[in-house]
Image (cartoon, rainbow, N blue to C red; front, side, top):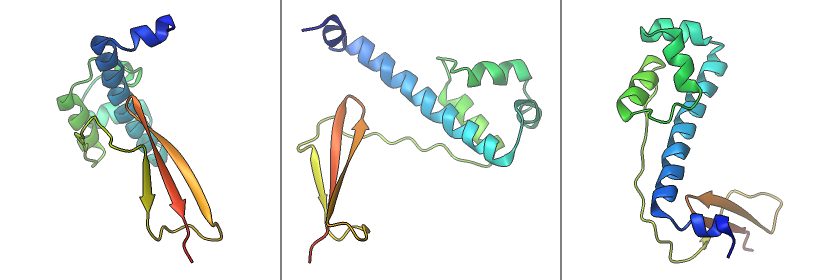
Length: 127
């Protein structure tokens, strides 16, 4: 077993990866919204009532972004934060969907990374 595989067994490291992933997901979604609105970090900081330095630090993936701060950032853009707690164990790594909206394709599949596992979503058009 490689050193990386061995290290990934560590609950502490896995938790740290999940925490950083959450910060990345939140800040990326907010950055996308700022870009969509063509709003600069300076303008966002002003609307937020915070310094540009603080806002810049947050968007540089500050590792200790709290839920409170994330909600404050989202509120400034009239957005909400949705956190979903889901079971860790997946009984099957393939999910079959009936009548998916897939046109002109008899079958297709999509693998979606989920935390430390993978889920494969298979689309099958039935006659």
